[in-house]
Length: 397
Ligand code: MG
Image (cartoon, rainbow, N blue to C red):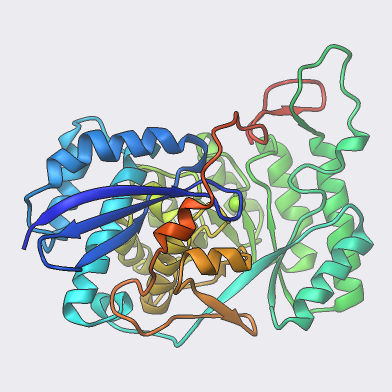
């Protein structure tokens, strides 16, 4: 058996540009799917796969996943960047899908079997006011969710209250001081109205100066968060040591990580509680499997990134890892609209706050290529990452 072809399928059924890899083998009808979605730079990933990985892979044995993962990582010599890691992930997940189909086993069985029958998920409540956020939390509770991320006006506080200087360029503006005050007031409101029967989470999205993030983590303690996410930017991770000595708020980190060196110290020194990488961003299931086992030695749990710009194929990979990992914590869930299920039959389903697998072999997900072609990817300039502080200073998204 050899790899016969490596194809890329781009589609945007819910608006976000998704990149899917299909690895075809010399066996009739035996192929695998993988997620290579780097939605903001999707064409760079397509080129990396079609022009660089495909010629490297055609004719090789698809069963040697670890060996091919290593080969793809080092063949370009320079490595661990987001474009190439996503390209490698697309192939890597597809190889695991193929192996599962050959074995007649779902991926979680190949990995070692289930530790749980479903994965608990968290969803996002948001609103312009504390009352609106509280209504959103209640609505999710009524739908059976028990883990709810609370944001106010997205990641930055109400933009209408930002006083920008005349002549400031277009972009997304926010004010860190009003943001932290508003979120604290909203969490206070939600706890007063709903009580302790809900697990609350919050995502800073790397938007605070480190000293403000330290104070924020301390101020959050009375609300008993399940975790506080991306309190610092990856460039500022050295601040976690200081934060750990000052606050017992549980910490989640890592959706922007690419390179194993970014999480080694945080895990080995127990500076975070949840490792939260974007699986395709670190190279796929093989990289994630290594990370799970490393984190488990330090009792650090997983909480994989699961937004709408992880494809359903990527969400399926998340779910298989969740079911297997002994140190699974919680899974982010974006609630795909119906047309996504039509393009990707087998997309994971959530009932009563838990995400369930199907029991098909491999990743258990398909793509209807005709339906996918009905949703071509736009190629416009990305706006939400053009982010500035209230005075116009450039900021991280
Ligand atoms: Mg996040």
